[in-house]
Image (tube, rainbow, N blue to C red; front, side, top):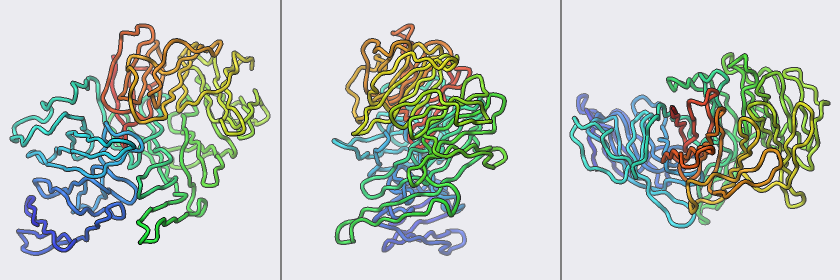
Length: 497
């Protein structure tokens, strides 16, 4: 089989691709292909861009990620994974097709997505740099070069008003996004688990800091991998498991949360690290200088007070410490919960500190709200399961995103579970199908992610804004004018009125 692109012929023969330079009249490079694409970043079947610079395929992009893959073969820059806004965490691109539009910089992607239950397809138009990506109902056919791809209708009429930035940020599903106090920087980190039926890894991700205007990466904090498992057929000896030492090459594990410690500075980032032995460590990283400035062991959760100068720390033994920062005193115990504290959130006005302890088969979890200025309880109730907890700016409402399934059956106009911040009582009907929730720092706007991305106005229930991309994590800018979402492997940023 031969494919043509620019001055090159791509000749596939016996699982090897030969790239022939038509001008030089010689083969300039070769690469072997793999039937098991999850064990190789070199594809079995691919599409060549019109200029011959890029190869694109659906399948294994590298040793850990499946999806829509783009490779600049001549520059050897590594394989780029395209963020797909309609694929959820845990879903994998099994196969599909890619067609290049005549402009060369745009591609049509038709991914066949594997998921529990029935599979589905995800179709989209993307740019090679990953900064332009949106779903469409179907491929419109070959377009002449003078046609603007932006004229292609969106799927289901999904609005894109205000979408100002897409950053192809990681090669794993993004689990955490956080704005700097001045709103100029964004930090992101992938989730712990990512893999498919053939590949599972734990840890080994990176934290990255981005310019929220240009999308350029300005800092990176690498983490070593704890373990990797590759499942192969029984005739090939089944499970292959390799473990990697955490401490020989620096930090290892995965990030469970992160925050910006000081309102008077925008270069320090607090990273909550779950290490390979399931011990926790709070690491203060100056991304501009590229150095770690402080570390604190055995901390399972942390939240920095909105006014600066204080931090709430949760420990494995259930202690909640409210102490000055950066001079931390572990003896400043505010309260003790019955199990490890895995969630701490301040309201934006500092009037509430909400804490949750871990549930287990031996111990019920607890959800508690405090007045951080006095240490007095507002309420303490049994914890219901949730993935994300958010507190309204004035502390009067608590939102719990509780989704643990993959399908959307409930109405989009219902909020997640809402609790009264004074009593802990449930408020109204709820939609359980949300992965994440985040209150705007101003007003009563609540952004939710799960079945798309939905912005609800709690003061005006009929005021609903819906976006197609499925958000795994959400964060509002400090002034409430921009919303960042972790969408598959990318960060989507909307400018809001």
